[in-house]
Image (cartoon, rainbow, N blue to C red; front, side, top):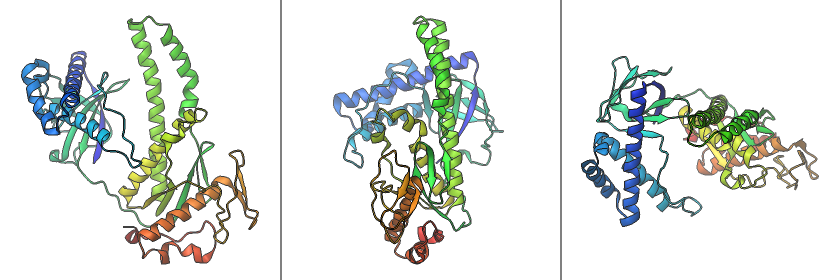
Length: 396
């Protein structure tokens, strides 16, 4: 699925209509959730409720029929996530009623694109009308039948429209003959198995001074006033800028890492557990490890490169020398790995990155029995950090 996003240029009247559509969408979703709470309704019963609501409420009838179905699907998705436990056997949070929904979603009807694909018209009873789209991505190469969802999003600075296109993005790359292991950190965003490191951008830390100033101004404004609303929007825009900086850094770096290597091994970090440490929670959240890992896996699929996640346990303690493997206990303040058995002296993070790469290659050899002769050739050579190229055909 490919998602293309564009900025909308609505008038004041169209802004009010968009807000009406968002509120109607939220109303249908909350009603479906209430029906499930009261009667333990099935998904098809939530679909039927959409037609009942359209008969009872004029504002619900004005919303496109398939948009009402999309609202019920959101409720069903929240319910299914709660009912189905995660990998650890824990259930997610109980579904909640939305109080500040920020989007409305259309499926195959209720919208229309202009011939040049630079304007979009929403044609349901809400009466949003035609709006100009601003963006650099071109919609013309994609057939209209491939567009399965159209969303209108409200953010702090403007309204946006998203087109969800049912297409498999694939960009095959020529083999580079390189493999890499990544050790995530806070001082350096990551250190790879070749000893290279990337500094952590820390966008939130850099913006904290201005954020505190804006938040103090917000706290002094009278509740319910126009000045408080304007101040709240300024604070939201500051946070939105930080969010966009994080995403821009993660996307560009993940794309570079995957394109430059044939095989990527990285830590399978449980960030939800790590942020429970109140001393490091803000720094870990600011680093956005999960966002980066998600884009590395995504670009791995796009470019046809295998990406493997390994358990991070003991990767910083084990010696990366192939002939040693001795565990050396260290505190967090010790940044150098010194092995008393083989005498290897190396940066702690580089040592961990090499162990991560070794574990990832071993995992591939177990999954694909034909890979060891090519992928794990470095074991016979006994040279730390030098790896043979991973053939795409063997990686699946």
